[in-house]
Amino acid sequence: MPTVPKTALPHADFEISKLIFGCWAIVGGFNWGPQDERDSLTAIRAAFDLGINCFDTAEAYGSGQSENLLAKAMEGKRKEIVIASKVGPMDFAPENVMSACERGLKNLQTDYIDLYQLHWPNPDIPLEDTLGALQTLKDQGKIRAYGVSNFGNKSLDICKHSGFHISSNQMAYNLIFRAIEYSILPQCVKDNVPVLCYSPIMQGLLTGKFASENEVPDDRARTRHFSHRRSQARHQEDGCEKETFQTLAEIKAFSEEVNIPMGSLSLAWLLAQQGVGGVIVGGRNADQVSKNMEALKVKLTPDIISRLNEITEPLKEKLGPNADLWQTDSRAI
Ligand SMILES: NC(=O)c1ccc[n+]([C@@H]2O[C@H](COP(=O)([O-])OP(=O)(O)OC[C@H]3O[C@@H](n4cnc5c(N)ncnc54)[C@H](OP(=O)(O)O)[C@@H]3O)[C@@H](O)[C@H]2O)c1
Image (cartoon, rainbow, N blue to C red; front, side, top):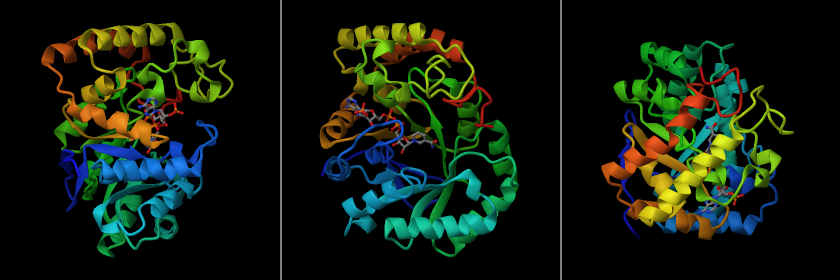
């Protein structure tokens, strides 16, 4: 088995592979369209065979279906993998955290979850109470560590002063969505909270698979890059479709110049960022998984990184510091 670099998470006694397999798209349906279960299972197994030990899932992905698929694909391998799952914000009341965890354990056919994450902030429930419930689960051995996701500066501050210790913050971060660089990533670096980046290839856009904005189906065009007129959008912004595709074209041209496939270049750029503990990439079949693993072989020079920063800076400024990919009234607080 090839060696994949690992990150030791704080307040956890295990390591995660720097590339993490994201188990959302493998359920198909909302956002993704039809998906063959055999492809999902072989994608998970390919990730494991290629050296990934960490799998990110959530009860929200197909109402437990993603957790079920992971359990099925990895039967007999439990001790060799790290399962990162999530509890949804509607379940943040302490008693609900407990019952959500029990459901997760059942779906995953295991008696512990390695990293249990709060999926989005919920300002209606005192965060200290939710963190207390996570600590109880840790003390009981039902989870080995806990983390957060989509947490902005305010919520991170509450975590810091709560006396409870989070191991990670999962955030949307990629070459064409750099919002966390304004203030969230710096805070995570300062407080030693590794960032686990999601949508690292911007749901396929950063592989160059869509030649123009018109090719992106509406259910994939829900992010703030696209117009609020797209049928599935939940924001009120005009978007920046032209600028997004101009930036993608420049990244593509540069990837050809340096002879590194666009997807690998995008993943390698993220892996090189300070404060990034892991990059969670989805793959709907074994072929996509093995292509994404190629990023680990890419070594970027400082010049390449600077050029990519330069190409994507105007789009970063246009989208601003709102770290919520989908909504104008950011829930990433
Ligand atoms: N915490 C959160 O709120 C949150 C939110 C979103 C995601 N996540 C996590 O992060 C993971 C990754 O994010 P994501 O799935 O949104 O986006 P992503 O990893 O940027 O994109 C994955 C999608 O890109 C396409 N793709 C993958 N590899 C490819 C390749 N080599 N060539 C061409 N296309 C390729 C596939 O879709 P097609 O083949 O259909 O194009 C795949 O499903 C998720 O699975 C989930 O675990 C967390």
